[in-house]
Image (cartoon, rainbow, N blue to C red; front, side):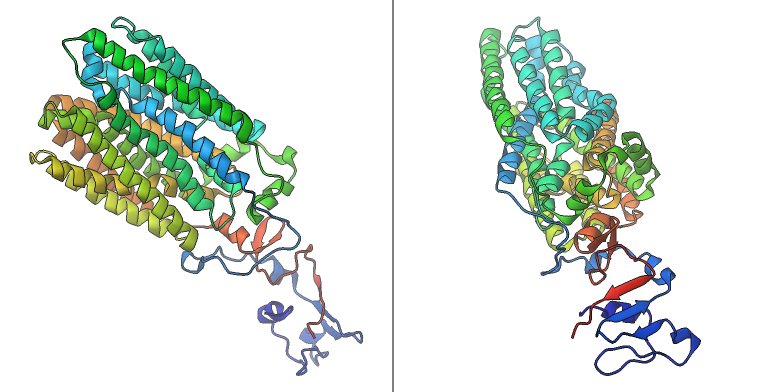
Length: 524
């Protein structure tokens, strides 16, 4: 489309010559169009035409165009982005491993520390409890001090918690291991909100969803390893507590060593942002005056955003359900299959690894299509179906069936996590990615606490079936809420359009400030 075509579509010119020049009209309405002798065209338009807001891009038309650029804003991708993503994913992995390493062998730690199952459950729940009050200072720190400072705090606290656990090996030292787990749970606050920030700040528009999914995948992989390794490293040696303590210490010291190495890599690799932004959406944000940013106003804006509120609740329900299932998996499996601690870990591994594939595939799909709401709704519905099937096949007495149903459940339930992050960034742009992601995680923790405690009590009193039906009912409600979310792809609208005062406008319009007089050079 040549310059001037879009304006002619908006306000039809009554008199024009075949070569595209505009002649002076014979009516009062046409008096605004004048022919200039130098070959350029001077057009006076009604300001109301230019002030009209264009609708956000429809999901069906949201494919990224092959050739669109904006010469006024320079963007560039750096190879360092892969190192940043890799290091973050690895120390996020270790933090997630430390979250689930107790719950998957609940009966062993109950015996070693001589405590109840509720006490071991709290070693998982404390991650969720710590997140809720600390998320606001954590997201404030991310917005004010940047990605590097937040990453260093997360990795540093992760190391500290891991080493404190090494001092908790002893039957009477449960309070020490709880203290260490509290430290790790604080570290998690500075980790969970970073995937969307890293993806937005370091990766281009064609890879941002895949990058976010990869960052989330690191945390999921940590959960998977947390399901797999503890039953192998700490077998149930109830008759020999010294051997049990030795095995626990091997697990703790190994975790501490890996955490230390990753903290050192974090110091040298992770930076706040690249020298040049990776996308036009980031370029627009980086050109805005920093003093205009208000964290309090950002929070208020997010809570006034009705689609985001619906997403907060639906995301909290789905992710809280995943946290509850992960925490209570050992108790659910052992109820029907006594002595199968090792297979319980393998079932958990299957659940999470399938979810990792789901995360990556969904991220690639979103980068290709930008159909955020449709993808979110479909994955939510399939997660509900997977939960129902898992619930009613758990007691069939066939472990192979449980492996299969857990894999299906994990593929969709865990695969949903990065979709929710990216959908949240899209419908809240230009608000901070860290703030929107932090709020999503906060609601996930709140629902996770509620679901874990209630489902755990139902499982203890009435069996796994009643607890799982409780989750199914809530996930069904989440489907309804997701269907009500209005899809408004704000960030994508900026990436595919020229920039004018931070608003998405057609690429055919000039990038200079629009006034009632728009000057366009002749295209011939």
